Structures are given as structure tokens and as C-alpha cells.
Length: 303
Ligand SMILES: C[S@@+](CC[C@H](N)C(=O)[O-])C[C@H]1O[C@@H](n2cnc3c(N)ncnc32)[C@H](O)[C@@H]1O
Image (cartoon, rainbow, N blue to C red; front, side):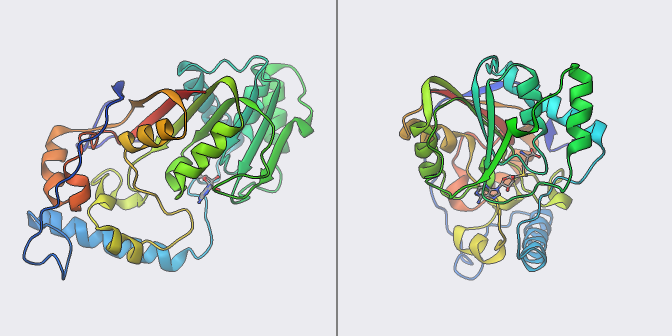
């Protein structure tokens, strides 16, 4: 991911507090256009977000995976970096039963976790984004680790969100990468995952809390918070639309679902200058929050 003046360098930030509630501030145009435009630049970004969201809604009646198809080496590098992050955050896969949500195009993270000693791996999803043949990918990983995985060890199933009734086994490690921000009914999903968590299970999720509109990600990462819920529901109508939850809300939802030692660790953090510029133009419910700087972050908890 490249950098922009809106983003600060990677910096570990721990946020475990409850965000302060937002105070709605209405202006004269609130009914017509629920936005608070502070400058021509903010107005342009506001309108750009509307146009691009409408375009995405029109062009994507079905779920499309935003991760581009890339070559085997790049995919393996990505899988190593995802698993490396899980491990830095406390996941030790050895002998553990792993459940992953939303694996995306392939099960390469599962293959790496199994090569790192996981006892089992199962991926669940609402959509099946898997490409037709990932055998060269798994073969390349087997070659790297010098052992051949049983292809049946990479289990995948479509399940019913948000209550996951098809998931009945217990898991020691529950992970996801760039998936939770796409799930609308997270309280029920977190409760369902708590139900299948073995005693002491670890829960680690990397969340991309930035706008998913590619053209605006670097320039205006919180663009999608500019709109009231009513406007957002009208302009962003596509499967997998981001839920707009902030770091502190993930903490609250996880605690409410019975997870303990819940914390978020920030990765990409918004600069103060960007936050000062954008905050007055956000929808009222987001303006008073103290976790707006967390653009991408990791949620970590235990059963
Ligand atoms: C951006 S992809 C991430 C894939 C992979 N983990 C990665 O990092 O490349 C998002 C994943 O979330 C899943 N997803 C999207 N909308 C969902 C929803 N409403 N409920 C459950 N999963 C969803 C998709 O099927 C996909 O696997």
C-alpha cells in the first residue's frame, strides 16, 4: 500500500477504551443534503464519494473480490505476511484447530498455517471467490516447506451468516483478514464465533477500516464516513459494502459477545492534519469519536 499525506507510517496503537458518543450538529441544509461542507475541497470529495459509490453499486450487482488476481509468488508473499501478522499478534498455530472467515480467492493462508503446524484448517464464507485451480500455488508452498499437504486438509464451506449454524466444531484459533468490515451483522457473527471457540481460543482479525473506493483511499480514507446512514444506504448498494464500523465499535461488539481481553492495535493511522480537515465534514454520528485515526487495525481477543 502506498503512502499519502493523509496517512502516517505504520505505528502500533492500542485502543481499548469506549469511544465518546457523537453529538449531532445540524446545519441549515441538513434535510436536503445531510453533510457539513467546510471547504470546496471537502465538497468535491463528498460529491466524488457519492458518484463513485453509485458507480460501484451499478456495476457490481454480485460480489466481486477487490483483490486482483496475481501471480503465485505474490500470492505466497501475501499469505506469509498475513500469517506473520497473526503470529506477531499472538497466534501460535502449532497443534491448533483454525477457523478462517472470508479467505478470498484461495486458501493460501490455510496452507501456510498448516505448514506452520496447525492441526486443522477450515475456511468459511458467504461467497465462494475461489479461483478454479490453485494447485500450482499449493504445490509452490509445499516446495518451500519441503512437505506435501493433503489437499483435503484445506477445507472450505459456504455458511449462513450471521449465525453460522453449519459451524458446530470447536476452534482454538479464529482469524480473518480484510473480511469483518464487509459483514453487516457483526454482533451475531461474533456471538456465533464465541459459541465455537474452544476454552482459551484466540480471536485475531485484521480490519481495513478505510474507504474501499480505490480512487479515494489515499486522498480521503474516511470518505465513506461523510454520509449519513440514510444517504449511505442509498448510494452504496452492493454485496460486501463496508459496514463503516470504527475500532472502538469492534471492541464493544466483541466484549458484548463474550470475548475477553479485547483490544485493537492500529496499523495505518490518519494524520492529525487530515483528521482536522475531514472531521467537521463527517456525518454527525462519527464526528465525536476518538478512534477516527485508526484506518486499518487488528482486533485481538480471547475466549
Ligand atoms: C476483501 S475479501 C478478503 C479476502 C482475503 N481474506 C484477503 O485478504 O485477500 C473479503 C472477504 O469477505 C467475504 N465477504 C464479503 N461480504 C461478506 C458478508 N456480507 N458476509 C460474510 N463474508 C463476506 C468475501 O466473500 C471475501 O472472502
